[in-house]
Length: 456
Image 1: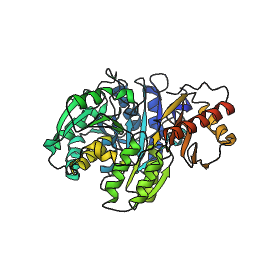
Image 2: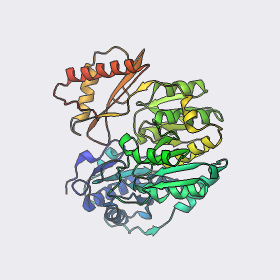
Image 3: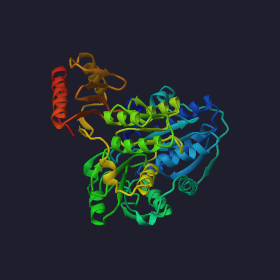
Image 4: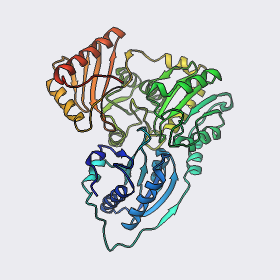
C-alpha cells in the first residue's frame, strides 16, 4: 500500500484514521522504526497509546510489526506521553514509541518517538519506508508492564507541597489519557482534588482536550470559581501539555507560566532556559533578570528537547503548553508533572496564584492565531512571506518569520501538526499590538492575495 508522505512531519507522524493511518500502514511504519532501531543496536522498545478509539487496534498492529522485525516490545498500554517518556528513560534501551493523536481531532492518530534517548522525526522514518520488513529474523518477544506505580512514587519523592490538604485543585482531563494518571498523582500528593472528565473516552464527549483554546477551558473556569478552588489545570489528549487557571478563573498563557517556573528554578540554580519563537519578550527579560541564559528555539517538542540536551538547560517550554523540566526531572514534556510543580510553588507562597502571577510584567498579546490553508502550501506561503516581507525590524528566521520591533513583535510560521499558518502578536500596549497585527496581515494580503484570512 502507498503511505501518504504528508503524515511524516518534522517531529512526529500524524494523520487521519483510517484513511492515512490504519492497521496496515502502521505495521509498515513499525518495520521502518525497527530498521532505525537496528542502526543503534536497540533491541527493545517501550510502546504505549493514548485513549483514542483507534488506539487499541493500532497498538496491536504496531506491536506485531515490531515483533516480526525482531524487536522486543514492552507494552505499557493506555498511558500519557509523559508516562511513555518516563518508561523509556527507565528502560535499558532508553527508547519508546507513543501512539497518539495529541490535541488533533478525534479521527486523528499518530506516533511520537524516542530512540536511544533522542527524539526522532517523522521525516527520518519516512526515508526508511519501503513496505518490506526484514526477513529471516528471529521474532521479538512481548511483555506487558504497568509503569504508573513507579512514576507516582518518583514524582511524590521529587515534589514537596506544604500543607497539601489545604490546597483545593480542579483537574480537567478532557476525557483524554491524563485521566489515567493525573487524579491519582494529585491525590497521592495529598491535595484536595476535584475532577472533571477523568473518564478516558476517545470521543471526547464534553470538550476537545486542547488547553490552548479558551473555549475548552470554560468548564474548568466555572468549576474553580464555584468551588473557591486555589488553582485549576487542564490537559491535552496525551497529557504532555498543561493549561493553568487561577483562583479568580483567569487563564494563564504558557509563556507567563514559564516566567513562574523560570524565576523559581533560577533562584536555586543558574543555567540556560529554552523557549520557542511564540513566547513573549517578557519571558526572555525575566530569565536574564534572574541570572539565566535565555535560548530561543523553533517550535515543537522535537526542537525543544534537542536544545535542552545540547545546552544542558534547566527548563524548556513553548506557547502550546509543553513544559520540559530538566533541573530535577528528566527533560521531557510532562503536563501532569508541570501542574504538580506549579502547585508546589503555590504552596511555598502566602499569596494566592492570581497575586503571584500578577507580579510578572504584562504586555498586550494575542493567543496563537491560525489561518487554515493546506499541508501542501503552508511552508511555501511562509517562505514567500519571509522573502518578500518589507516590514522593518529585527528578523528572526529560525522558525518562520518573527520580527522584533521597538514596541513589540509579530510572528508567522507553518504549523507542523495541522494545515494551518500560525501567527502571534505582542505589543507594549494594546494599540501597539493591534498595529503590529494589522501590519502583518496587510503584508500577507499583499504578498499572498489568494489567502482567505479568517483568524481562529
